[in-house]
Each structure stands twice: as structure tokens, then as C-alpha cells.
Image 1 (cartoon, rainbow, N blue to C red):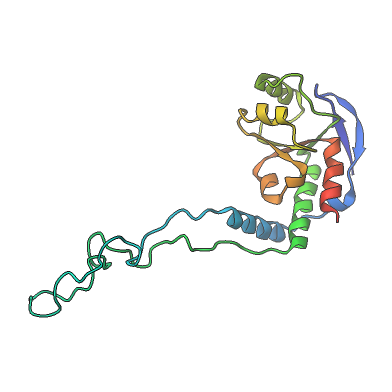
Image 2 (tube, helix red, strand yellow; image 1 turned 120 degrees about the vertical axis):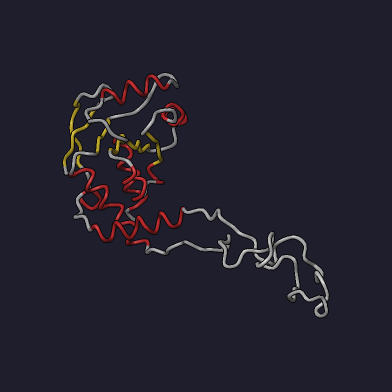
Amino acid sequence: MKVTVYNQEGKEVGTTLLPNEIFGLKVNPDLVHQVVVSQMANRREVIAHAKGRSEVRGGGRKPWRQKGTGRARAGSIRSPLWRGGGVTFGPTKERVFKKKINKKMRKIAFFMVLSAKAKNNLLLILDKLSLPEAKTKLMTKFLGKLPFKKGSCLIALPQADKTIIRVTRNIPNAQTIEARNLNTLDLLSFKYLIMPKETIKVIKETFLK
């Protein structure tokens, strides 16, 4: 697939060929959905935790004797029936939400989303990406010159660039990522994918194994 290459002024400076084995796949929505669900589950953090009767402090001795008081039998003040006692069947940190997905399925779904971006003109290739100073204003000005409509964008860098990462951090709906860390979920979280030509080579070397 042949796509246009832009410079940092938003002007066309040539074309480049995208490898068909990565950017020429037909999309299978069911497979992409399955991979996205698994990635969202694997990123999920278990926060809610309610203490059971064995975890609540206190309740080491029997509140009163078993018989003769006229009251109901009680073995601990930390019973779920008591105020301040443990919670029955409450959420715990031991819950596991992880979903396993085959590497091949994950890789193919990733290539499918890249193919969809390229096919729908949501992929912008740059000849290079660099800034003279670490200023958010310069990055905002650069993004404003690129030929795409309003929308969120993900900038895939061939390698970590502290300047680009730092200035993009303060721009809403824009985020940077190293090419080796690209994945299906992050691609679908942003409308546009922007990357220098060098990133294509990194994607080939990282994912085509």
C-alpha cells in the first residue's frame, strides 16, 4: 500500500510503501473485540476489598457465656451479623480478571487495526519528527499544521524521545508511545495514528517474527 509522506509543515514531500503483511489485512471485528476485551481485563486493577470476619480486628473471646443469659448464642463480636463485623461475600483483592489470549491472535488483531487506520486515512506518516525546544506551544503548532480533522491522536515514536514525550504530555487528546509498545487497545483509543517513517521499520522488526 502506498501512502503520502508529510513534513512537519504539513506539506506532502513524497510517498512510501507500507508492508502488506502489516497494513493490508482484512478486519475481523470479532477477533479485534476479543483481543481488546482481554487487554482491558489484564489492565484492570482490583481496588475494592471488604474484610471478612477473619480479617476484622477484635473478637478474640466469646462475648458472653453460651447458656443462661437469655440472649442468643454469640461466638464473636466480629460476626457478619454484628455492627462492625466482617462482610459476607464482599469484594476481595484476590479476584482475578486476567484473560489469556494467544500471541498470534493478539498480533493479527494489532495488524488489522493498523490496516483499518491506513485504509480509512487515519494514518499519517512523517519524514521526521523533532523539535528545537521542549515547548508544548511548538508541538501544538506542529499538530495544527498536519492535514487531519479534529480528533485525538497517538504519536508512535521509533524510540523514546524525552523532548517529544514531555511536550505532548500537556496536550489534551494527544499521547506518545514507543513503537515497540504499540497494541490494539491503545490504537483504538485514539482516532489518528501519527508516526515517522522510521517507526514502520521498528514495527516490522518487533512484530514480524
